[in-house]
Amino acid sequence: MAISPYEVGRPIEDVARVLGLDPASIVKLTANESPDGPFPGVIEAVTEALVRSNRYPDNAAWDLSHTLAGELGVGRDNLLLGNGSTALISDTVRAVSELGANIIYGWPSFVMYRFAAIWAGIDFAEVPLTTQHVLDLDAMIEAVDADTRCVILCNPNNPTGTITPAHDVESFIDHVSDDVLVLVDEAYHEFVQDDRYRTAIPLALSRENVIVLRTFSKIHSLAAFRVGYAVGHRDTLYQIQKAQQPLAVTTASQVAALASLGQPDEVRRRVETNAAARHHLSGVIAERGLLQVESQTNFIFFKMPGEDSAAATGEFTSRGVILRPINGGWLRVTIGSSQENERFVTVLDDVLAVMA
Image 1: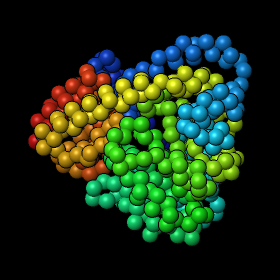
Image 2: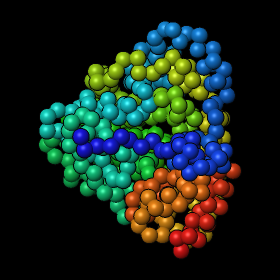
Image 3: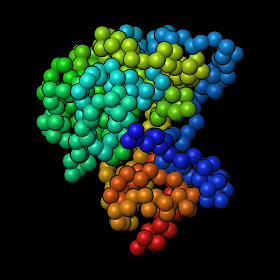
Image 4: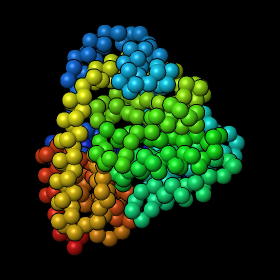
C-alpha cells in the first residue's frame, strides 16, 4: 500500500530518548497545540464524569450538542459531533465516495485530506496555492470535473495561516454545482482578526452542499479529548453520519467540551495573547531577513535558507526545538508560551549561524 502513517509530530519523550536530551529542555512547537491548559472548570467536570466510565457515552451527545447549538445560534439537527474534526473529514469523504470519484483541495494544506481520499479509495487533486500562499479558487473551480464529489477549503489554511475572504468563499460556492459538496474547514476560526474573514456557517445552513468543520482542539485546548463538529443542513449531516462510527465522542470528551463553552472572556483573552505572541515572533523572523507569510492563526509559516526543510528542522530538533517541516525550505512554528517562544528565537539564531 503506497501510503505511510500520518506523522502527528514527534513526542518530546521520543526526541529526548533518541538524542539523549533532558525532556524538560525540549520545546514542542510542531502540532499547533495550545500552550495553555483547558478552560476553567474543565478538569473538575471531567474528574466527576470518570465515575461513569463503565457506561457507553451518549451517542447523541445531547447536553453538549444542545448547548453548542445555542452558542452558535443553530438548530440541534444542524450539528454533527465527531472524534475530532480529523475524523469528520474522513467520515465526510467516505460518505460522498463512489467508484471513480475524486476530491479537490489546495496544496499545501492539511495532509489529512489526502489520507481521507486514500482511505476512501478515491482520487484526489491538490491544486497549488497562489504565489501569496492562499487558496487559488479559480484554479480549484477549473479542477472540478464530472467525477468531483467534494471540494475542501481550509480557511484559515494550514500550514500557511492565510485566509480566504468571505465574499470569495461565497462566490466560489456559487460557481460549484449543487451536487458537489463544499467542506469548509475552520479549525483555526477563532484566532482570525482580519475583517475580510467570516465564518461560512450561514452558507452551510442555507445550502445543502456546504458544511463547516470546527474543533475544540485549538482555542479550547482540548487536543487530547478529540472533539470536533460539523455544521450544515440536517439532511446532509445525516448522510455523513451514515459513514461515522457510533459512540464517536467519549463521555469525558463531551463533558470537557461542554465545560469549555460559555466562557467568551476566556476565549478573547487567549486570542489576544496568541496574537501578541504571533506578532512578536513575526517581527523576530522579519528582523532576520527570512521570508514568512502573514498568519491569522496560532502558527507561522516561514522559510529557512536553502530548500531542505527536513535538514532545517533536524537542526532545530537537535537543539531541543521541534518544528514542522513542509517543503522547499519552508517550516511551520506553533505559537507557544512566552518561554517556549524565546527558546525558539535563541535556537533560530543558532541554526541560522550554522546554515549561513
